[in-house]
Length: 216
Image (cartoon, rainbow, N blue to C red; front, side, top):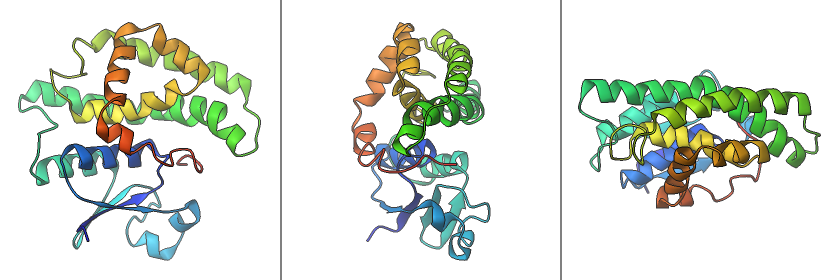
């Protein structure tokens, strides 16, 4: 049995990012799929006192917060490096990890995707006002991405943590009709997302993606 365990819900882009990094590094791991009720238990609080996901266990080492997990996996294991050595390029990777968490997730995932895709799955009706407003804001976020994409990757000429976490967020945006139209109108972003979507790591983490609720 692998000494590396990821706890989380498959639909969460944060959980998916952690799993993608492990696959890209060639690390054998076990995915412990959990439900939202478990996040509120005393048992889970021992892993993450904030009741969020994912959580990584590596032997007796427990780590939460996705940016920390991504960095630990990249730096603590062998395999292709997912961070540049140049200080400026590495800063750009960290910048995009922040953009993914603070902008794309909060609007593109938790508003646009949640309303348009997850709400009907959960028996609700999308709030069209929220959909329209979030699509407008996400349009600006995608403009920034389109402007900064100089190659097939966000930073440099190889896959980095920036692509993985940003791609996980933009993938959800693209699942909405509004987001798909926005991405199609941005050729560099569309090509970048298509390139990522063809990777084995992205394909493997699609299983069961919408068999539940998104992360809260």
